[in-house]
Length: 578
Image (cartoon, rainbow, N blue to C red; front, top):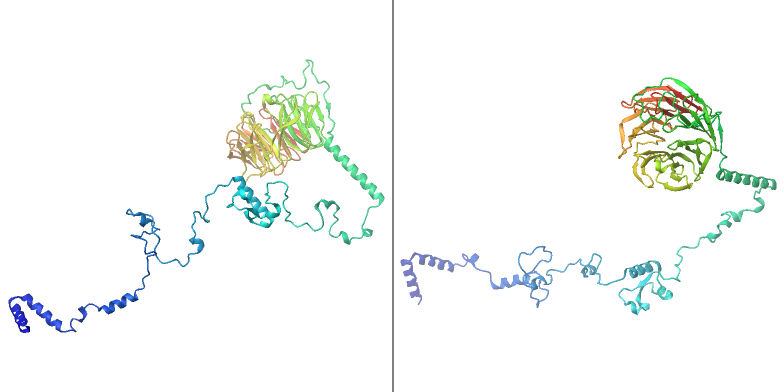
């Protein structure tokens, strides 16, 4: 049999080359070392590897048919998974850091909120009760079946109070604070201090009978004097200094003269104004410094002056320039004065806390107004229909509006943070501008107590004197940093940075500013008693005159004259320059 196989193999090798390669392979197979690397591993070794496999069992439950695993953190699925795949349990090893709180299901950031409905009032009631008394109703218990176990928190306290809430009457909030050592607060009047128990009454100094008597008299006198100053205004009287109050035609001194060489009834300003150069008259009659001067409205033929000697005087500007009448009625210095539109009446504001309304012709005091505060400025409403109303800037930061018919306060503008220094009407008298010690400028609509414009910069100083230009477009404000600032008086009230007038010393004094009628010049006094005149266009200081020995507190340019300027100072004199 073997011989036959060998003969067949030799036959095949002769007839076919492929059989030759097969024979070689058979020969190699006879050599075990040559083919050892080609043989597969034995079954015993394969079983050993299977035992060493450490891969975890990933199936959680053998009965669960999960299909393809779907990562729960996946944001996008590119195929359509089955229901079983989407809701299959998570696979993988257990998280060793997963706590019981993390494992708990939750539908909000702080945990799991069960669906429930609670009345807003009930919720707030129980919340406040818990924060106050320490107990509240258990929200998981039916409110119709309330018992001792229905409460959470201080259950014993709830049983004592029968579950009373903070909104229910008859239960006082328990006192948490300890009682103050030393007794009841109501006995404070009897408390003699911590050293009272160590003080021997024999060693306490007491006034003698004479000293007691003197002390009582002194206190009674002081109280009486205080009441007199507050309650009783000074007695008003007037002195007429001219011989006849009326002329041969029955006209009083309020009548505008026709024979002064100037048309005082004209509404047009002079075409061209010139610098005043010399003093032509001095009005003397006040015994102390003059605080304010005002020209008669429209014509300017009379001059009203107020002084620190508590008197107000009316002077002639033309003719003999006499003192016509003196108004006496303030017990302290007069701060400000203001004519009404036709000049028949005027208001005066004094440091005695009184505002008084006077008749310019008869000198009679018509009304008195006070709110127990010092008025710093006073202004009639220039509107013809509102001549019964006036406003006053007070020392208590308020602007008070009075009606002279009822003599009552009808409005208060309370927004400033310091005493109100000036009030100036603008925009056809629909608005007014006020300045204050709080270094601000506020603009108000008439009769509306809220400022619609507030101007305050860190670089700004207090502006105790403000004047409106003749054309109504500009406000000249005397600033306490020795310069005159110009604000627009229409719409935006912006500071005109190109118009700043410097070169004078006014720090600490409310020196009044004025314009020439043709808007060519700006005039102002200063602390040295000088009259300063600037050019409006170039803001250059054109002229300086030594006008007074003390502070030149006010300067007025006559509205119908080309070069007449009136100044007043704390040297008690009023001067006319031309």
